[in-house]
Length: 155
Length: 287
Ligand SMILES: Cc1cc2nc3c(=O)[nH]c(=O)nc-3n(C[C@H](O)[C@H](O)[C@H](O)COP(=O)(O)OP(=O)(O)OC[C@H]3O[C@@H](n4cnc5c(N)ncnc54)[C@H](O)[C@@H]3O)c2cc1C
Image 1 (cartoon, each protein chain N blue to C red):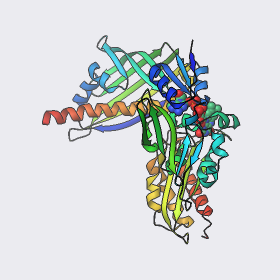
Image 2 (cartoon, rainbow over the protein chains, first blue to last red; image 1 turned 90 degrees about the horizontal axis):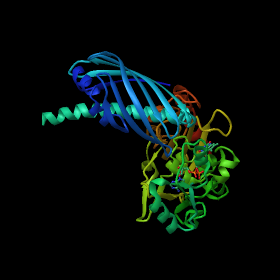
Image 3 (cartoon, protein in one colour; image 1 turned 180 degrees about the vertical axis):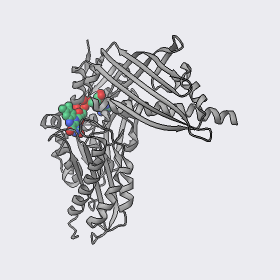
Image 4 (cartoon, chains in turn yellow, blue; image 1 turned 30 degrees about the vertical axis):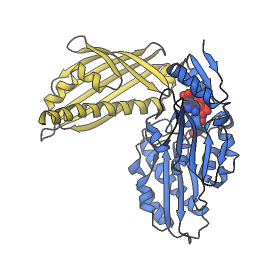
């Protein structure tokens, strides 16, 4: 399944880039993320805990930035595994950051995800909506981090 | 091994849940739950079966309140007079899944499960229903519209359970309807629309309009853009069709197996129009 969208964020390209490459910030922004560690310049590992219809998943994951062109483009490969339900998620995400004038940036993304194992039996109707709402939440959190961070330094 | 507890009164249900909290799962009709258990997605230490709790069962109708206990089944609701007086409830129960799901599935189980495609939720939203929630600390109530506070999410703490749902069913001058489209008969809704209206005595104009939709967003929603476009307006079909075109303002469908997002938007407009027209027809008005 594929999700794509564009959002405008009141921050410079460079700031946005710095933020999405900072593991500490990612822990705050990715819904349910815990214990994110940076393994190398381009690799992270971490755990994402989510719950849906009373089913709790603990995805042990690896994220690899397979293509990077700071501060405009990144392509990421991610895998996550939940041992209890024997499920696996594979994802590829591409993000492009463009200046949109007045100190704002436009971030566009395309995320492609696939699920296998028992999680897949929950049905695409349920899982898809959940992922979409998590992706929305992620970008809202990114926006909050940047826009409120800025507001705080102003005052 | 899973421990299976079967309280018979409210107090012990609340107490068991408080003792076991996150290691426990409540079982009502078991329709949604058994799928998850069978697929190995859930493996609770304790199951608390509340289907025999007296206080949670049955439908009470007072002079102005209707109160439905959490473990009331769809079938019990279907055969209760309230399904005829509040037709949108009867209409929706009639089109839920199959006989087995309706015989075992409960209203409280449905609401707790919080699936945005549930058929019973839009009618209850049009009734401004309130959810009664209990725990060892007592009872609190939350409007259903706020209770579903995100995708498949309900405003319930780990030691709380849904004990019932209450609404004002006294106003006999309301008419209502539920219109559903699904890909296969008895299937989940591609879109479901409930409407409930009140008109002037001569039935020429809407005085109150409530519309709610299932399967078009993170939660079921009231369609306030359609409601606002109709209140005070004439009940003729053209006005209804115009107002129905606003339906897409309040919804956010995604492509899924039941239909594409674009198709769902189209269906939402069509079903809003159909549902309101049927409701107006039920007022017996000549248009
Ligand atoms: C094959 C199939 C087809 C279906 N088709 C439709 C359809 O067309 N339209 C439709 O609307 N629905 C449909 N459903 C869903 C159906 O409405 C729900 O499964 C049912 O109403 C849930 O009620 P239950 O009593 O079986 O809940 P259970 O399965 O017992 O419980 C569901 C969840 O809610 C929790 N829970 C239950 N009761 C409470 C409570 N009182 N307080 C707190 N938590 C509680 C449980 O722990 C569990 O997580 C379908 C279900 C199945 C299995």
